[in-house]
Image (cartoon, rainbow, N blue to C red; front, side, top):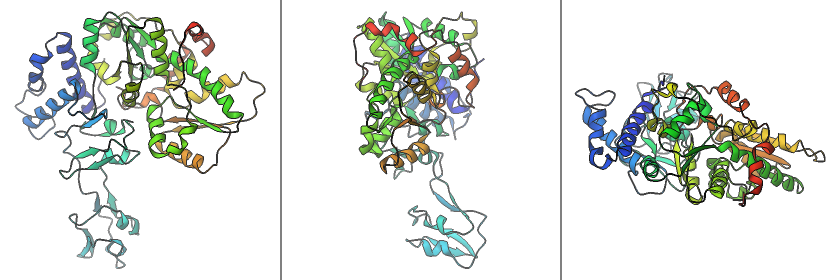
Length: 473
């Protein structure tokens, strides 16, 4: 039985279910205005100040699910009606203030925003410029930094606060990692959905093929993977292919690429995580030359499918927001998140379905879903070459480790090294739009990996040898 880990996830699922149901029935245009009343019937609000506020938020969420609330290119947007629950004043004096006589906090403030009242520090928030110097100066660490969750987790500082005290995203800095989507306690940060467009394809096109990310094993861990595949086929997809097969293709291609890099005693990073690649391009542009020229497993899988069926539509299904950005300049037609998929399939009756097979990829291709999976697959492939000199592998789990490693690379402190960059801590299984927000079930993923029919990348990609397309970006 499906259990939601938090109310934000549940509320989003309710909207996706209604939008999907009306889209499949071709009634969305006529009935979308009634969704907020159905989901928020009143008279009492469930978790907002009043029923009218709840309905306003739902209306915006419906619009985002259909076409987005704005025409900006960024795949992440802020629902203004939902963004009203965060404290605005960033720095506050806590009860830890001892009323010392040195007053270092006051002396450090460049705008005289701190005064001493009854021997306690007091911050004038109308003057405060949030520089943080008072916090650094306090010997008791009595000044709390109450940064908004979305701002705190953003790795590039792309989120700021507008004059109306609402979050806003700088598209030039955003890497679409989805950290704000995951962390926002009010669900105000949301990725634009393509549910309606995909359902229209399913209703009018007999050749729509799904590509599922291997993180599926963890996100839908409460049921069999095969039953999820059956549920996907039941809503109209012609077939379902593992993106892990594309990962097997990339293992071979990227290993050969790295061997050439080693001849120059140089460095190469992975390229499968689009948020990582975007982070390099926006914060360390000079290091772009080290990023692998291989396409991602998603794009490799789409190219393979279209080499067999050129006129089909391919839909990537996974736990990643950044894939919606990566899709734009590729042969992938649509991206559907696990959150969105959960609103399209019948989760309540999924255990009653017969499982469908999914046996395209190898153990190593499926292991791409977790941090360390890419590098272990590369290492396994390079073990075949007995004449290779020693090389290093660095696994970066999340942006803190990515930034630390990229700074070392910029300083010239790395050579003969393969760097795996995963924006999400834990890897794709901890993607921001997964439907498993709890502790990652590594056993579920490992079980899924070991169930692979193909034992090696060579076995998995034998069908690819006759296909004509490039794996270079």
